[in-house]
Length: 401
Image (cartoon, rainbow, N blue to C red; front, side):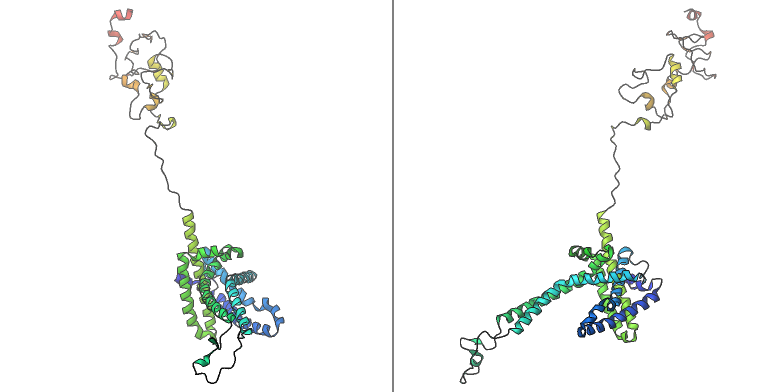
């Protein structure tokens, strides 16, 4: 993370142009803004020139907000952005300043109250008791007290309260400033991601980003980068090279802010939308097999069964020799691809050599009285199955019957 953030200013397509423009804007911010403030104090009418005098600083802030935005979205994959759409940079800079003022508002209020109390205490510092001159014959220890032991230089109650409030306020302000330094970049990342100031000024959302481990690591790296970078750049500021170095360090720091917030967002999205586990449904063993899924490749033609039985097609409701009445699945659907049809197994489809069927005469009449002629031709082979002796060798009495 640190190496990629440090290389962000140099991985852009126009790195020299970005460095030059950033250096000029930083230098103008350091020179023009202090001069404008000093002149405005002396001549208040120059306060109306604030939009012009603060333009370099606001554009620079808007540029850093853009760096954070790209860090949140893709980790500054394309390097530092270019200085384009200056109007948008100016507006983003104004929103960045408003965000900073909003989070510093508690400090401003507390410091203002303490200063006001201190001014009132200084203006009304009068002893509540008029002290008479001490007697000359008092010893040095007694010279510090008068009457009933009241200290000579005792301050008023308002001064005591002001001192206590100053101490408590100092500790509170110091603690809040630490909180501000840590949370303000998180709020800046929220502003960069959403583009809405009202979302960034909500402390709950900024604190949620700041509470993540990814952001904490990025913030610590950014703090170390800023401290070391400013220490190395300070001696070279008079040579203008240090100003370029300062701008580069600030770009890397804001890239770290964006990367930390982006890593936190990626982790939360992955946790909120996990991949659903693939569940394979278990079919019970007793579940009937669908009729469409049964192999019908060995299904016996209806004409063969009708011909061998000597009658019409079987009734689906009536049980036959090859039908299982205890199951809704018929015998035809239960046949396996490796099993021969029942008609072949019992030899009913194999006729006699002479062309007559068993149990019938040479004309094809069935013994049961049927007149239907078989549609199958007898097998013409020596190894054909025979129900009995050939017709020529049969007993004539059988023929007469």
